[in-house]
Length: 127
Image (cartoon, rainbow, N blue to C red; front, side):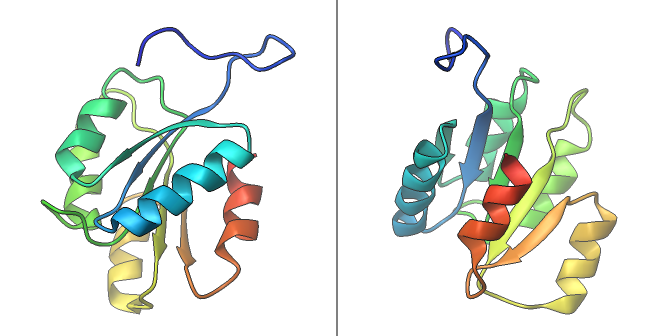
C-alpha cells in the first residue's frame, strides 16, 4: 500500500478494501469510493482482501456475497483471527435472511442491498 495518502487538509484518507467476484461492480465501487475521496483497493479473491487488511490500516472492508475463491461468510470467519479486523459491510443483490443473520452474528456492520439506494446508504456508513 505504501505511504498513507492525505487529503487537502493534511488528514490521512480512509482506506477501503473492496472484494467482489464481479469485475463490473468492482469498477463501479472503485469509482464511487474515489468520488467520496477515499483511497481503495479492489480484489476478486477473498484471500487477496485478507492479505490487504492484515496490516491493520484499513478503515472498512466492503464485500459481496460471492468472491472468486470463497463466500463472504468464509472471508469474515477468516478475518476473526486477525489482531485488527476492520468493520465489514456487505453489498449484495440477494436478500437471504438466513445468511444475513449468520453474517450479522459474525460481526458484519451492515448489509446493503444493491437494488436499494446502496450508494446513499454506503456513503453514510463510510463518511
